[in-house]
Image (cartoon, rainbow, N blue to C red; front, side, top):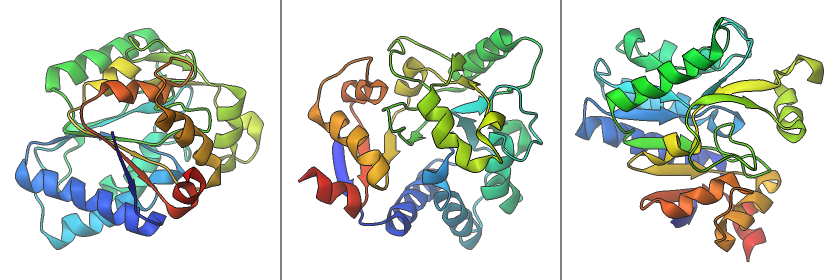
Length: 243
């Protein structure tokens, strides 16, 4: 596990965007594991700019998102479908809709949808790079504290702290979904390389706990200690408070 301080969100976002571009240039059939949330909001526009600047052919690139809210149509303004298309997929014409994979949060059978997503991910292959944020309580994806390290894609209940954190994107907290379809921890760990990104005071305690080294299901992100290729990208705020 490698810790890298890139000082601020702008530099860190540029770094991650460049790493994604380099991957696709080296492997036009790359598989990307993508995350959402406020941590990623500068990464995808920068990535799009680099793709455009290099006339990158994306027609064979596969993408898999970590999660989607239960109960939201893909067209909902706060769905992760909308987030990904607004920040990334709508900006480069060679993305292929058939290669973009995001769980469906509004279907009649959520258990079947979870199984379908997990099996399709397995059939395509391991993501070459998996992007991750981290919650204040140490969750990755929507795998809350207490999640089994053997978990795969399924419906999860969101903790009150996660609902509160996500409420900044909704008109009122009552509008925030209380469940999501999320890749499990075992699903995430199949990636060949993992880049976890965290910024600001609110994330410093989770990063501190992660770096302390105890591997426990009470801190879902700690499973990353069992992965051979993990980078943790942080800013000055977190780095200076770790000293």
